[in-house]
Structures are given as structure tokens and as C-alpha cells.
Image (cartoon, rainbow, N blue to C red):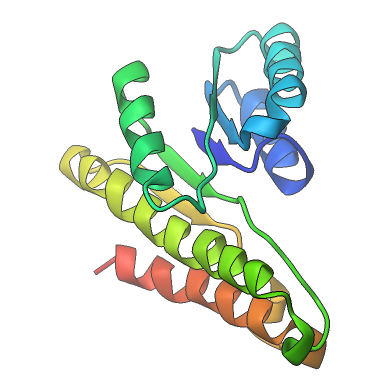
Length: 166
């Protein structure tokens, strides 16, 4: 199981849940999270007697998802489940949102999620086995004024799930 954004929060929690069930885990996060992610990988291995792999990639970079995919498939023979968890949230008035935050939120929450799904899905279809879990937000269903763009990016996760089934 590959989990993006695995160093903390929901990604960390999900990776622990999967490890408890005996799944081997591919943990992915930003290069700046290397120390934290390495420690978490070691803890999962020791506690649950599973195998872990760690990868570090900024998925907002133009070729970040493709580079991650290529690194992972060279190292791990089969990915059975992709968990698109990595995400960015910024709240506040849209008119005051820093452009770099707007850009990063759309690139990570939308484009990286779509690219990773598209890259890993064909092997799952070929094996007739696998799954993609896109971590969304209740904001996708009932946005609030200061989370409008974030809600829109998380709504894509819902539509992307439908696209993967077509």
C-alpha cells in the first residue's frame, strides 16, 4: 500500500491501520520530512513486523508524480493500493490568498492526485485487483466561505474516484 503524506496526520494514521492488518507500506512525503518518515517507517517495521519503503518527493513539482511513480515501480514489484492523502489547506479570504499557496494547493490536491491515480491504475486494471483511496474532506460537500478553493480541490477527489471506475 502506497500512502502519500505519510509522515504525519491522516497519512500516518492510515499507514498504521494498514500495517496492523499486515500490509507492507510504501511511505511518501516531502524531502524535508525525511527524518520523521524514516523513524516512522522503522517503528512500523518493528511493531508490526512488516516491510516499509520510504520515498521523498515534492508532488507539486512539474514531474514530481511521474518521478515518484518511476522510483516506486523500480523498487516495489506491485502496488495494490494507492492512498492519495498528501494535501494542502489554506483558509482565509480568496482575494488575500498568496498566489504561491493557490498554485501549490491546486497542484497537489488536484493535479498530483490525478496523475498518480492515472499512473498506478493501469497495472491494477491489468491484474484485476487493487484500489485507489482519495482522501477528501467534508468541505467538498459543504464548502464554507474561507475554504472555498480548498473545498473545490477536494471535490475533485470525489469526481476522480468516478473517473477511475469508468
